[in-house]
Image (cartoon, rainbow, N blue to C red; front, side, top):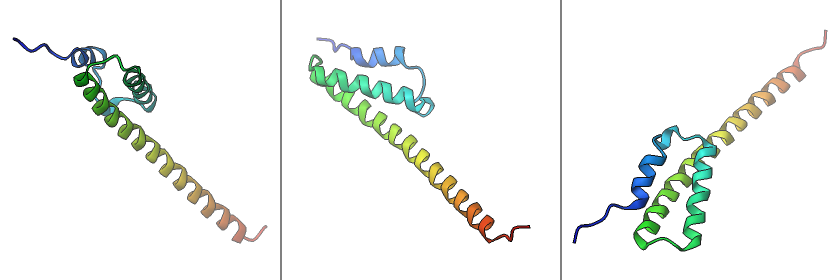
Length: 94
């Protein structure tokens, strides 16, 4: 008996030609939501469930890296603003 290719894998290749690194946060989040929806529906085979779960893990990691990067940018901007405010408060008013 010949093994059939995973329908999820073939759909994934046709649907998403971009690599994970090129997915925007929004695209990764939307795909993750779809993965969760499909897993929660329970209508997929065990093999497809495992593949979906693995994909979901990758997407969740990618989303988290975007959020971590945004959090770091906000922290850097706040620190920069605080330094500028401190410098302004120490300058004598002319």
